[in-house]
Image (tube, rainbow, N blue to C red; front, side, top):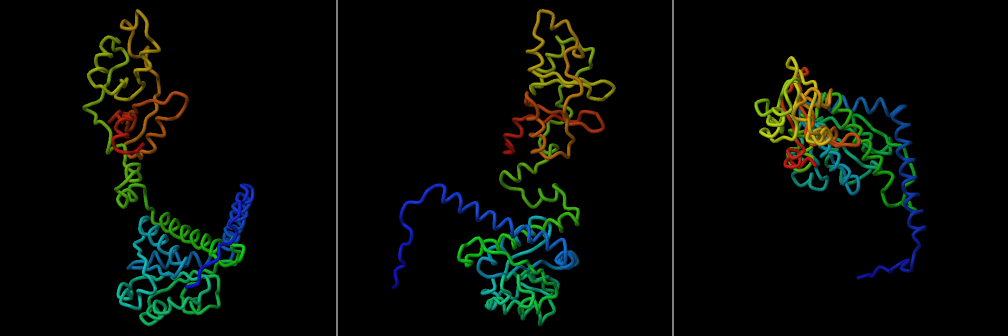
Length: 335
């Protein structure tokens, strides 16, 4: 066994480490700028053709790649699947041991290889060619064997790796990843994939909670604390207390015109408070949301301004249909 010699084990300054990080980001940013420039020119037509090919496929997107390109490919497939384009990753080494059976003639293959000469991809490429499965190549070498075999070539611009030896895939994988994201989002937008669609595919965890809709969490209309503007505050406070939501909606002709919160009561506390009307105490034109508002957006509305509030009326055509409370959002895991 050959032991690897430890190199550079001495102390290193913070400045040296930070400068290295900044150089890496500068080089990777330059790679993304080159990719953007390419998309604005010739690569854009190939990109659009690839997006149309995927949109028109009756089957799924089969992503394949080896090494670092394979890791990028796995993320690419996962992003496609989570944004409404059915996809999965086929490892090229496993493909020649039976996983080629996962690929059908209704599918589209997207193969990633920076050099375009990855030997392990040969079985996938030959299978796609033999059975006339449409294939999109993502490579930096438009003259490679992979590009020659592909129906559409997304030729990435060559840009220096952040690795000082030019060996470790860094800038190249950032560009692959960015192009994959760009394709996934272009497909998402072109299909009209909505937040509600996204929720169906992401039911778990905090992301799933944030993708809940206000209509899923709100207290319904029969639970709402409501009163007319001319309601005496002595009666209004009773309604607020009974409903236990920390607020009271002021309704006129069926429309929400104001709100009274616990904070409003404290600010107007005086000897004659109970003799005044709800219309005199209310805050007019309160912040509201619609039932199809994302729960995360409702939380953001609650936190707007210098005085965050804990309850938000849900309205349709100006009429109150529910109330969502910050405690509901907390229980759902939104915050």
